[in-house]
Length: 351
Length: 278
Image (tube, rainbow over all chains, first blue to last red):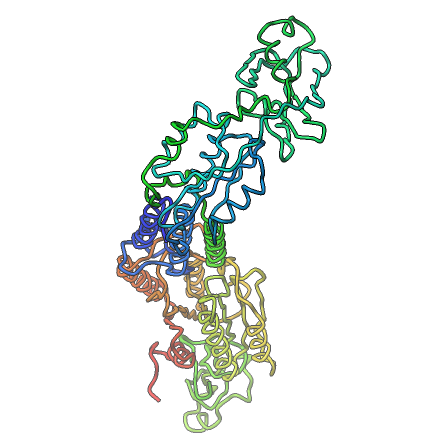
């Protein structure tokens, strides 16, 4: 068992010792007893009780100490370690439109994984997004394995590697085993339908947003949905807002593809006439698959992606930032029950 | 109480025939003196033997025995209802009061009782009926002590009594009681003070903040360090109390709750104030 925040446990032990000390040196008003001849006692006030070797109210003290320790243990977030496996494989499986056959990807994944290996599927997020999700998966599993192996099952076309890929790749200290599958042929089919929403109401936009698609970016007072849009499964995001939320996506259909654009255009102004917006509009109304460069990636970039010295030890994986302990709630509940019992006992003694 | 006698401390002026020496002279067999016959005397009381020997016409005088109306005042204030669990002080006071009544009644004296200090004082006027002692016993048994009314104003209720016993812890209106008793003694009455003291008052078992049950605002600290001082003060007060009552001409007896009531009664009724040898 380990503690995610052991400082709380140390503080809790110190607080429990403090409770013990307080019970040894506690000063309180002595109990009140009737005595008809009280007038013959000296008229002095003595409220303090001297230190005692035997703590007062042992049961109360024990309840208080246990409550403090339980609360401290809950805040310290104990983790009970599962049985470690020698190797855990994290498989990044590509099922984007760049893949010629998802069945081939499935076969490759099945040939690799076993037991509690982790499979991370990705589509339009590209290799960068897949690597980030792989890093998170390794971090979440770092207590369950001695070492990790990262495997990328993908056709590795040029459009899946972006400027951030190399930087993200450097965060993984070991090798990335690349399993290449066939890439889909370039798609020249015509777009079947573009669903471009219009601005509602015609009023003033609430804010100025930036949207980017295929390398074209426009900053304008667009209207944007207050809630993040729900991208249907299998769709490829082709445009994003500046904060990464999807602004347009493309879903394959029997006639080619269907593209949904959730960018509200302002009715006033000359935005639609600007060259930058014209280029953005041309990208968003272009043929299917125009957003993905399906040419195989350069061998240099592929080698850089694979590089590194083999498997990665668990110790080299960063711990999750927001690790959780399933014991926390139970320990807090125990602390609450103990405090409740302490209150009831104190009330009974007062009565 | 059988075998205990409670003689008067001074010559009685009672009218009824009883066990106590009276100031009246009468015709009992106990000879006192001769007095010359005067007009109006009953001729039948002339001592003809004396006339035959000395030719003096005189009548024979003798001491007469009279009864002594006895009243017992018992304190039923809150301070007597202590310790709360056992009511030892009240039990002792009630037993002593009942015992004194029984002794006096056994000698033919009319007895009465006043229960004071409690919320509703009770008075049983002096009487010599056969069930008087039983009535007194029933009243004492039925009473639950509690209250803080003064005792001194109740003493006139027993103004007809030539002998008065006060059973109390004297923690209430002790000074007023003493002054009133001093007047009664000056009027020729016998006054007996029985001071009821609980053993727990001499050596308190529980220490802490002690509160006077009759005066809750009186709170004092009594810990192990203060105990010796407390006992010294209490002892000094008891001695002072006894001295002031004796100085006033009253009999003063201390009754501890651990003592048997009959031993206390023997001390009270003894002319010397000590327990007589059996």
